[in-house]
Image (cartoon, rainbow, N blue to C red; front, top):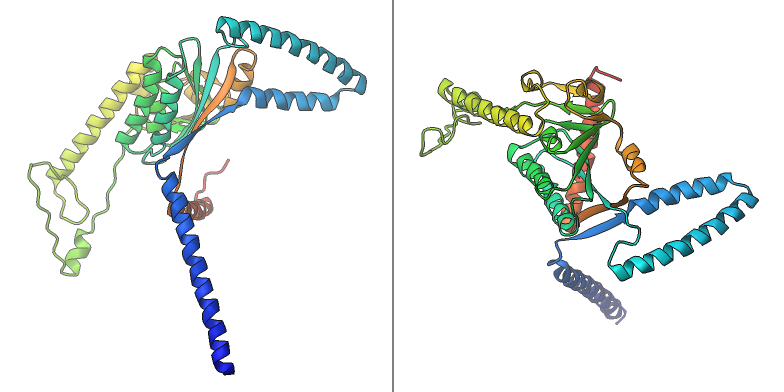
Length: 348
């Protein structure tokens, strides 16, 4: 009897545990199904308020109690007048502060430029409310990547220009290759002194395992229709005809890249800068690749009294598997970066 009693208790616990797991899974699936139609969220961040708030907090720490009292009295009076003007503007259908908007967008590009998904949403949102009196400010960071991905990213920025809205792009770290292709769309390019700019060139590389396969008596077959459907391959035997065609395609892509840069920055001597080289900001301004040496922070502070600064950020919802994969990729990237630091002999 004691055995049956213990067994019954164990069985009850086991069933309770299983039911708890099942109910938890059902709840998670139900929540996920409700959110599956929501692709992402558009966040608006008032940078003007943040910057002014920071400045005010620091100044108040430096003032005496008497100075603070005077200041608060003055602010109260100013706020009363501001509310009065806002009420008047609302009746006339005008903006409360009368300032044009400065829309801030961040683009930190990967090799495949997958961030263009968020960029297109951000640009669409801006174009729905902005006019020619406003301005778009893009904080760009990218070392380039796939041609078609960055071609689309540049096209998204071109949409802003097509609506006659001023576009300024700031490069704090790097805008090379496809990243610079995006940057040259701007009316004005701002670069930090040691930001990497340029790299107007095209590169392609592919490993070939044909000899290894032959060594192990492994045959590889690839069937195509069309003389140049496949020029170079990883597993087949490449010939000079395929190499020549591949080089021709690279050259054609480079020519298109040069034409694109020349169209948007006619002041550049394209033959001197389209060598695939990159330059630091202080060198890039001499070659007219950029227009001004500054950081994005300095630019935003300089516009604080001229425009209402607001950041537009589209965030895509990620599934649990995507979050775990992203965490794993970051861990791998950090490990590779540390390994590179041990082997690269150029230091600053």
